[in-house]
Image (cartoon, rainbow, N blue to C red; front, top):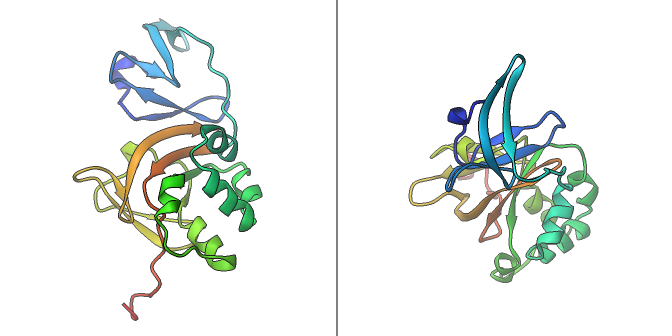
Length: 191
């Protein structure tokens, strides 16, 4: 049972159906975009929170990103690297998604296996919401390379600013970033 006093802004709460819902407490309480109109109705086997709309299960990460309209270059890159089916899988995944503007900043784009590695560097296995990202923490990406998280002065991953968090999908969550991030080229000895 989760009482309203247990909720934190930015929290991702897992539903019985499987996908997560985002908690927003900036102006009242919203769960998955629905406003809580009455909270903490106790029952013998849990707690009821009344909301003002029906929550529908979200689409998968790629469908959510495509519908947003600001990730067309990411979708094209995923198609080119044959990673579409992987991100349509059950997950869960956390995707740090560069916008079309982020791709436009690139002076040279990777291709082939190098492109697949760069794109996998944007994905973490499991759900990592903003409350899970700790300053100077490290997440291991699907490319196998670690990425540094910074939260002082605004959240960043591998130097890219995280501009929006908690875009929920059926198989994970998307956090929007303002730059394409590239895995380190050298190992510890080379560095």
